[in-house]
Amino acid sequence: MTMLDEILAVKRGEVAARKPHSSVSALDARARDVSAPRGFRAALDGRPGHALIAEIKKASPSKGLIREDFDPPAHARAYAAGGAACLSVLTDERFFQGADGYLIAARAACDLPVIRKDFMVDPWQVAEARALGADAILIIVAALDDGAMAEIEVAAIERGMDVLVEVHDADELDRALRLRSRLIGVNNRNLKDFTVDFARTYELVASAPADCTFVAESGLQTRADLDAMAEHGIRCFLVGESLMRQPDLKAATRALVA
Ligand SMILES: O=C(O)c1ccccc1NCC(=O)[C@H](O)[C@H](O)COP(=O)(O)O
Image 1 (cartoon, helix red, strand yellow):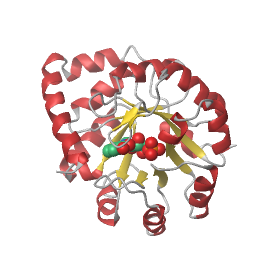
Image 2: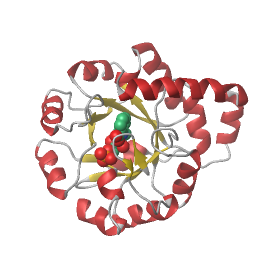
Image 3: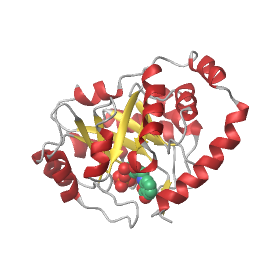
Image 4: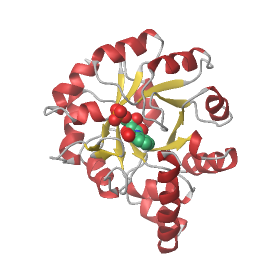
């Protein structure tokens, strides 16, 4: 069983336990009290130079605790001041020590669009994400069959949210391109053994249609990493751990994108 399989099994159990307590219509009613979706892809596409999705990530299954003085609203403000285009907030509790409240607090602290970084297994979670204020959700192609991906994507589009579709290889990219979203995350990290390989990302992007916005995800640490990606036509980046380990998040963000 891979780490992704383990996470998905736990997530299905959590969703089954939560669903009976909030109907989709109740969640949609709650969503009317949060501000309209901020354009996530538009913020990336509209940003000149390197466009950064800065991640608020307390811990991970591979690294354990990443940041002790964890303060999502302060981190959100620092990322925004440093020049990030968007935020990513991990909400999974069991494996990433995340929380729904972190997303609410981070979004309230700045004007940036926010993706709920979690493991979507059911369209119900999309309604829940919008009720929390999320502007975008993640679809991990390795986690879902084509029917489930399409249902989750439709639930997001109906609510005016963007969808980041995450792939790891050419087969997954083919499946991703059957969806409507053209915002494609290429995960540099192999979720089976956690190794990071940028070369695979370069190959995938080279073979893809021109109307896609690509986001390189995972294992990016330095400005040189981002510049190397840019030489292969990738100008959007999702960075978590390496930023979260820096004492001055504003300066660290600036160093990546300025
Ligand atoms: O971060 C992990 O170890 C991980 C393990 C299993 C599934 C997902 C995982 N990460 C989720 C992410 O997508 C990353 O947080 C994101 O790409 C940022 O990566 P990094 O910059 O390496 O923190």
